[in-house]
Image (cartoon, rainbow, N blue to C red; front, side):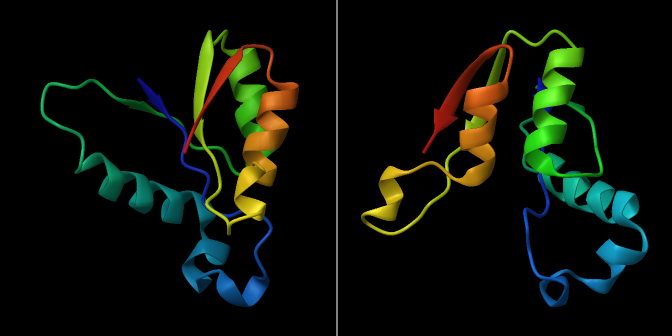
Length: 104
């Protein structure tokens, strides 16, 4: 199981914690470590951290590593907007070289 955890997608600088700007990889590792605490014992998980624009990093990583399928969350928006995918999931659906399952 590979886990992609995009941290930020087009957020304003003031919304990003200072430690994420000074050492983004270390900050990402701390978030992944917290997420891994929720994985049940006996489940094997592989993590990989990329620094960059999430939609491009996810699509390129999956293509370079021969993934058969990507599972990605949709973005929870309001009523009418909720019918649309978020920018990351929409891009991945259009550009991934493998199947993409979008989970709500």
